[in-house]
Image (cartoon, rainbow, N blue to C red):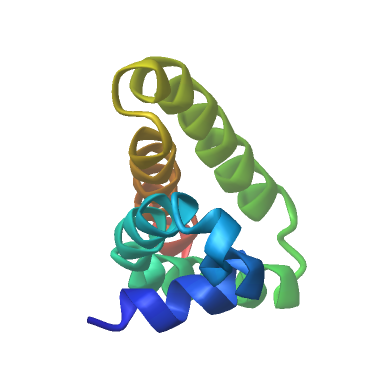
Length: 106
């Protein structure tokens, strides 16, 4: 229900313009999938900030590198099959995995 207004904020007002109405459903799908990972993003951000505050910069860097690699591999596998939704799933999966290492160290 909120994906329409959120996608216009996330993708820009031009996504709702008459010439770009084809992009609106794709954008809404992307926003809906990515929103599922928001709690994990908050946990990862807080855990990384706590570790950096305690002068451990290696653990957050490693967690981000692993998440980036997972996102890249996920994109290679999912985008050809699912398009933009596959990109959203790959990014969301990487963001759900990202807090595991920092939280484990805390």
